[in-house]
Length: 288
Image 1: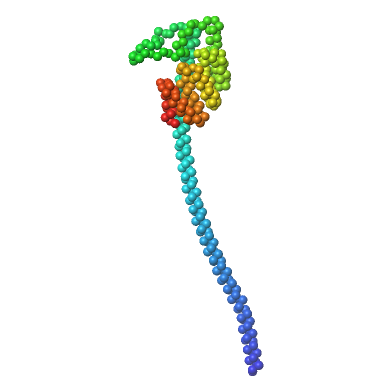
Image 2: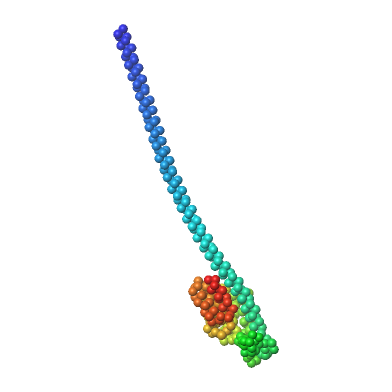
């Protein structure tokens, strides 16, 4: 019996050892799974924290960008408003200049027609309705003398002199036609020929004036200024001098020399306060 009990006890011990051997790895595996889950959970928490921090930073950066974008947009709008106001002023000036230019052209054609009739008629006296220089007007003030180009009462030209005058007029008219047609290069060449043929003639001041206008139309502002200054210096008493000064100021403005343009306008107003050009100069100074 004792041997049998010993054998049974040995079997029980063996079974217990086998069971323990089997249970230990299972408990170790269970411990490893829990540790892994804990580490995964910790990692998820850290990732969540990092993600939250990144989102907070991105939100702050987006807010800064939006604020900066609004500032830039506001600056652009203000700049556009200023540009629009400046362009509107320039358009008003250009429209006024166009109206005055058309009026000057009509006056020029009338003046040319008058001179042509005087040349063809051999210097006929003024019509009975003409104003006498120095005679009192309805207001009591003495009437002003007409411009030199109209009041000229030179003796009738004859022979070669009359022929030269007629040829000069035709050359001037042809150059003016080129200007009206937009052929500014041809107009400049034609008016230069008029000036070269008779530098001190009655048509020379107008020729200089239109040369300067043609150069301005070609955006040759520096030469336009030089040409108009020739008119001002060589023919200071000519009625076109105020308009020439106005054109000089316009060319200076186009060259971005606002200070020089302002000085020219102020000089024009001071020297020729009653001229149409002085009125336009005042309007420009009020806009700038």
